[in-house]
Length: 194
Image 1: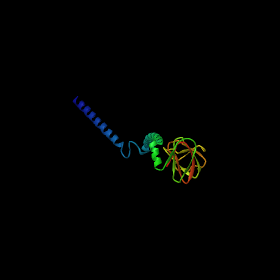
Image 2: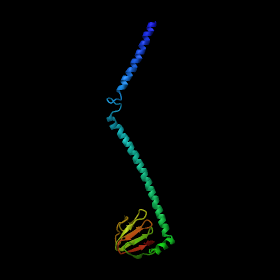
Image 3: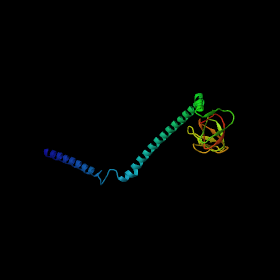
Image 4: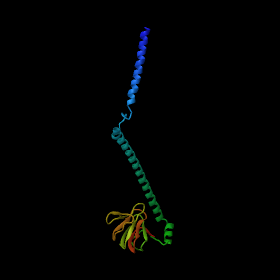
């Protein structure tokens, strides 16, 4: 009985040793350079495209968020500039300082003919209108907006030339024109000249 127990115990121990050594032999083959757990082709075909797509989606979402934030801040800035320009246009102290510095101001009413020298600028109040009668002038923007050409239904941006006998209106406070030479304009509405 003792001999049978010894043989059984020895056989069990040998079996356990065999199983353990077999496990280590099998495990040693996987994950080596000859037999990797994940192949390069699997990484290139499956893992990398998914990682790149996820990164592009995250970058696109961040860019959209930043673009929306920049647009909102730009709109807020335009509104503040328009408010400040409107406040200055109705500020008698400011207008008197402009007049004292050599500029002139006028208020709304009927159409007025104004002659400008080269380099003089006319700043219009929002809603004021003008017609270029002679000479040449370029647009001055305020708050990101220039003048609206009502004759052709289009917007004129900073530095673009105005056309003779076209009707323009200012959509923002202090947009206007800069005379390139001796120029005559008709203006209806509030304006200042500098």
